[in-house]
Image (tube, one colour):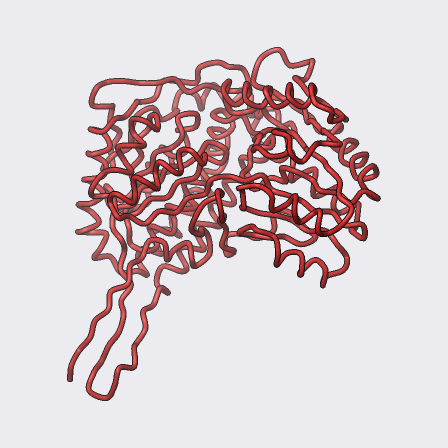
Length: 489
């Protein structure tokens, strides 16, 4: 594999720095820019165009024009062929995209490469489904023919987060393209680079100009203008509850469908008959993967009192072996994405240290790292279920452990928050596990495993964790509307 530290200088000179609109690189209409930062060393990677309503309008109008023209007339099978071609091109360029992702958000190269492979799988799944979205015939009687057609909703807005920048673009853009929609993407201001490079790759493999557009900038400027644009007919957003509620209210004003994933405080419930080694192994990845910056991370561990000490010991021992450092050095954990996120996570660490919880590991910054937004893997035990540490999404490498005595107590704690994204149940009694899973309030429940599923499995939250489902065939149906046609014979 390439020496990544040597290659960075070459790559840095080619980082995208402007909007990608209607098949071309465009500066902001007002000339404004903002800096994108390498969180590993807090150095500026470059300046990127800072979009506003005028840039968004240009992108949406380009997407609307091609959606009503060349893209709409393209056969579904041909759309699928282009999406599959895009997957091949991305796979061939995987290292460049992975390095770009690592520079922008700090994650280890091995994780960025894995993310690119996941995007390729997402593209290929949706490519194969593009010509399989079928309508139905309706039996109204002998003298009537009635049937439905599935049509693309039109221009779609995609406001994506910073924790998996390229992956989250593909998760919603790929099914939108398979459905025949066009897309305008507003990436997070912390991580604009791979979204821009993705849009350019779409043009290179033959997508008509305007099918995929990217406007970079801040949420209150570019993001707000995008979701409120009258030509946008569908919205997908992943991010905070506060912003999600604003977007949903905005979508209601325009009567636009919206898919929202708004995070979670996800419980892993470990019963007294669980396979302890499996549970602790999964907990390590669930809590510390991507430095804990995962909506579906195992944010809180509910462990039967008889196993708690053994579980915490195994978790802390495993976490102590994790290496922390620059993403280009391919450690186990990279930095947090930004100074703002770093400060937020440290506020929770301070709260945990001042509480009655027991700090079993970490709790601060690795001593050997002088710059960058690094947080050591941290384990708190004996956490009060009513505390901020146990109830709020931390989004950092912080494991929170509490115990329970009865299944009823575990269920009350698991369901006692406004979140409802994912949950996990560990028990060798499958009947008990399934019964418990039925009663958990979450969009996904995983039994004896964490991060179960793939591009085929729908995902999404209930309660404050959002509305709608992504991935799988439901993910494509988000971007289709039903037209009914009746014929009197």
